[in-house]
Image (tube, rainbow, N blue to C red; front, side, top):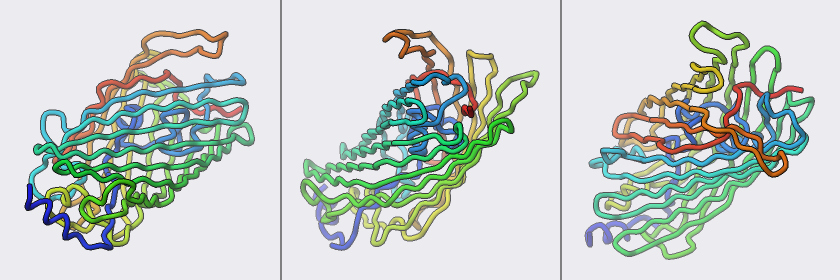
Length: 361
């Protein structure tokens, strides 16, 4: 351990922790479809994709007021420790829990929401990293919902602890997005932008690094929803996204740094394609999802890796209250994401059941 600390102290003064994770950690409805769906994102869980989701509505949300919520937990490294950052150095040794919670409300054409994620992971020696992120959205629908625009803030807090020495970085960025919904044809598209977040050291300077950086991102995607039922299922949805992640000058990977190695990360712009599908196999009761994404390598020590995802969502109970403001079916979802040296299981995810199509007035 003393060798690790001495090595960490030799990190170049200009180095900055590159804080991105190429894996998708979000509620099960998007995680099970490979993290794709910016063109169909709506409500609380959609805020993890684009801020315009705060005002997007599904076909059942026809009233003046509409509210959505999501609560999800994922086990990262279930059964086997994982190479969470895909660094490719040493044995995979990380495992942890990701918690997601969010809420969104729309009144008329306007919407407002916040979705947060907390990821805490540890290695076999008890060294710990905590990553806290949030996505907010103030959005509006135009032309009856054919266009939805939104913008919000993107706060970041990163905390690392090595042998009782701690450091905390925090910062704030911005994000914006647009959705275009065709209506009867079943096609929709989305475009999202997230600024780079530079988080300054607030407590300590573990490893001699006084900044952590979340790179800028641009995501473009489309979605198609079938209008006709098939013999084996109904409401088939297909989504596809392409996510560009920007470079980070003088960026280094945090996990190897904790283990005594300086590894450059984020030297080039990377592209991650995502694909997913969903359908109702039991009408108004059970949905199944499948998907995949190609996690682009952010270091030279590891190759890009292909992920396979899947999951299911079942409608449980109907809830009413607050003089009609609460009138929703609650659903429970599970998901899985598997790749080389990586796995996570979404074992507890609750949200409001919803139809697959976006609402166009």
